[in-house]
Image (cartoon, rainbow, N blue to C red; front, side, top):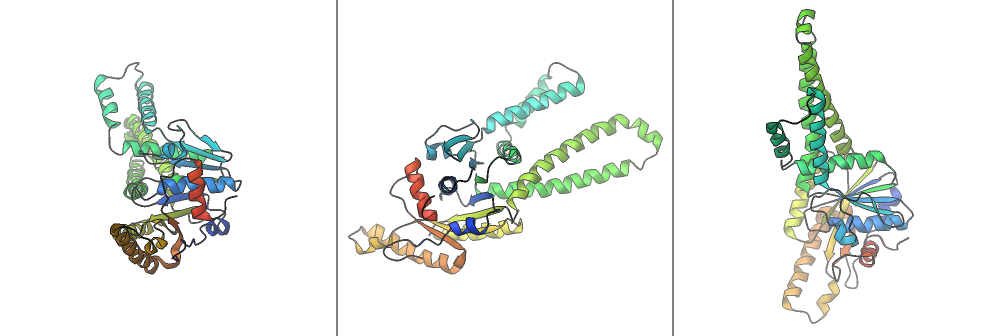
Length: 335
């Protein structure tokens, strides 16, 4: 994977040259491995190649603002450099929009001008559900993608467990709505008299069914992007540590069950092997020995699926100069 002099980079850029239709780029992995950094650097690289790129965070604890050193939270697509736009979604605002939509539907359905107190309490409580924030973010993602306007969309993903949960939601909705649709078909077999008596109830149930179908359609649009082998490139970020390697293997197996197309693995934070020849503390020497061992494990485990090996940077990757340095470490020459 590397020599004493330098980290060898397997050309990650080849993926973009070989598969130009892969417009949805995602970096996955455990928290804290560098997914957001890689997302920002990839967006920078593609923008410098003349592509119009949007990098956006689907993580409630987004840090694109910190990386780009620009306040972009809740402000929609913000131009960072020519061709490069970044966006952090304001989930709270989206949830408030949901609440107002619910109130409006109640006004329209029941012809009232004030929401009853017990209903308002329910609306406010529903917004505090654990999955509501993530659902709001993914709903905005659907809007972003459907709207279009960019050559590449780079997702700064939530931790793996949340992404898998979201993927599973589509299949749950399929089963649930399939059952409801079946019941609706059975009800239509009743005689005309029963249908007249039940007419208002039918209308109410059909309205609920239509709402469920609408939600299901939006979830499917988002989850189908994650599983589109022609349009999506999904990369796992790993480091040379035992638990990270094991967790990544488990995650890769789970993602395979949902047909997420895996493009390869990128090793992050590799220490320069040349340090071994220098007078360094015993602790650092032990770290290098351990890293060397796990790099061999990675090589044996993932083989040719390793697309790049990125060195540990001398400081945090924040600001355009460091983003450019990271992009060069990942892809080679820029522009």
